[in-house]
Length: 324
Image (tube, rainbow, N blue to C red):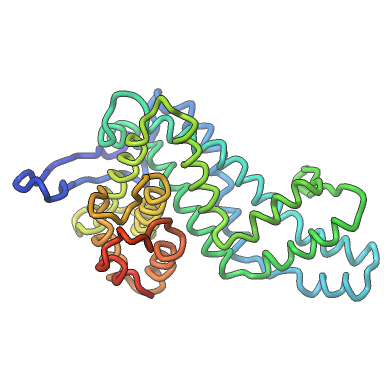
């Protein structure tokens, strides 16, 4: 099962002091139990292609030259050449979106339902927690790459305009027929500043709304507890030293931020109120201790993709901490 989550110490001396967790979640080597196996295998099939998608996205140079040629010399050959560059990337990424919309509710259902407390879920279902963390990391990485690569939206805008003028369907190299309806939905997806985060927050919100038998507190407390665990791990040099890979520390940073954002979208009052179960100030201060190349994309995610940061109920201290 991997290294056990241990809730070793809680500060009970002050009722107003948040619980302190001395914990270790195995984000590197957690293996599924038999009870987790069915959902784990289904999610793993989706996650298997996530790394290659990010690699393709990071290396995407755009089809600007081919598109200009297709516009200035609009032959069948020049247009086909442009489509062959633009379409496979867009369709493959969007199919991953559809899979994500399907698997996130299944993961949340396993991690938030039943009689176990959030801490017990994290302790006994570490393999599923690891997969949820990997989805959160993918989401933030995807959106970071997308914002750095304006050619993605520019190229797809060309495809959409061209397709609307044609009266037939094209098939991508991944075997999917792309109708004008699917093209429109993909275009709306890529037009959003942080498209994958939007998909994840909507999938989580829909999970809460559609599962009336699972109290919303189950979901928000699970997100909050996992965020606290991430913060505690990162604050403790002895826990960080247990990571086998250097990049795991950045993964945990991304996961912590993703959990704060999700909590803010799902909890009715959001993540920033004084009554929140999240230590947002601790999260932000920890981020600001990191090198800018690590911290700035994550701080910007908190600044611009949360729902309640600018509410009147958000303490000025938090607003000042997150001021650009």
